[in-house]
Amino acid sequence: MTARLRQMMQADIPSVLQIESVSFPTPWSSSLFYGEISRPTGRYWTVVESDGRLLGYAGLMEVAGEAHVLNLAVHPDFRKRGLGVALLGDLMRHALEDDVSRVTLEVRPSNSRAIALYERAGFELVGMRPNYYDDTGEDAMIMWTGDISQPPYPDTIRQLAEDGKRALAAFGGNVTQGTGAIEPSPRTSPVTILAIESSCDETAAAVMRDGRELLSSVVATQVDFHRRFGGVVPEIASRKHTEAVVGVVDEALDIAGITLDEVTALAVTQGPGLVGALVVGLAYAKGLSFATGLPLVGVNHLEGHIFANILADESVRPPLIALVVSGGHTSLVHLPDWGEYHTLGATLDDAAGEAFDKVAKVLGLGYPGGPVLSKLAEEGDSTAIGFPRAMMNTPDYDFSLSGLKTAVITYIRKEQEAGRPIDNADLAASFQAAVVDVQVAKSVRAALQYGVKTFCLAGGVAANPVLRERLRDALAAKGVRLSVPPLAFCTDNAAMIAAAAYHRFLNGESMGLDAEALPNLRLDA
Image (tube, rainbow, N blue to C red):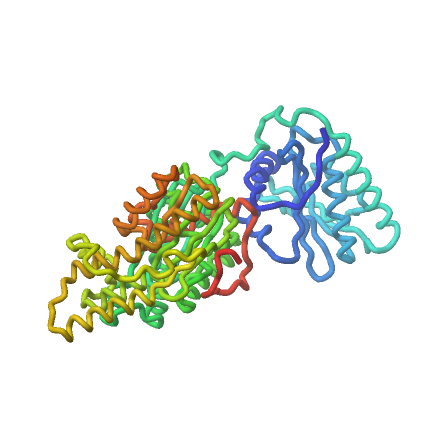
């Protein structure tokens, strides 16, 4: 059995914290480590692992042509095997390749083994820092190298790196012996994510632990402010997000019973959506990230809607097909695996939710009209009016609803001109059937073509009972199971953003403080 070096990832931090806690009287916090890993430049962190278990780690900070060793630790069960030599050798090699002039560090005078290792690498004592260590009041030894680009340092560093390689190659022993603390455990090291969503007219925040356990979900809606205008006014939406975001985030933390010190990572919707609305949530999340050092994970809003399915159905797993239907989006997406998205088709004009709202507006049902129209349709005859099923039989998976919307408006005008009364319930039911028929037909065809056994319905229109029932029955007849989010998570919320961010976080994904809101962000970008 051999060991190997590689760069540290965010997913390693629970294991790093375990080693840190048994190695130092005053260990670093999780937020410090996450802050270090998320920095785009000026940091280099490396780990040594064997058999998938983390055995040690080390970090280097580079500033103005100099470098400082931030941390170096090997789990107590695996010391005296040359792993520390390998870690330090890797740090020094990196510094040399980055044209660093000098490397510095502090070490406890009582840590004779570490001192011997640093002297072996060419460090020399240059002074003391009195009362440097808070736990004991012990002084710190300040050790520096000379210019590592000049002899004898290059040869010393190469030799150190070679000795480290030999130690890794010769590493042996069962790494599962000892305390076992080096193996990451989500039970002892939970990943707690604070998520923010502000893509349209809901300001939302949620706290989630380990991608499943929802500790809080708070949503502040703006519907009453937009109702008088018959739709969302972007300028008003941005202003209301600014007014609400601080209180919503604070309430989410209060309900969860935690503080920011207990948060592992931050998540925020980066797009798509209204640019002004997105900017508010993203700016606040970046401010929290800057102030706390917590990593920031950007999430696609549509991805969040898909992940809403796992909030109540833990058995949902890729491969699957998802139909995302909301006020701004209608698309069929194939997920071979989490984080891998292939959009099979999308609306060429109006989204389903948008079409529902526009027809409801023509009927004088107010805003948002989709839920009201759907309720009205329950009293009508879905076969009363033969509205067109646009693109029903095309070989692609695209949708078009503008023609249907025009057909509804034309029908209303003709009936009014002829002096005939319009049965709003029949019209609503017939319109709804025309929308649902196309969506169900293309969804079933996609599920069969890609051979999936799980199909997810997502987005605000996923709350439509007729779409749910028709899709469930049609898929069941083909041996495909339908997963639908709870009604509370069909519309925009931050719990779904937290669920999606958890998987991105475990894959080591984060974004810098220069990240921008992307109103046209594609799911399969």
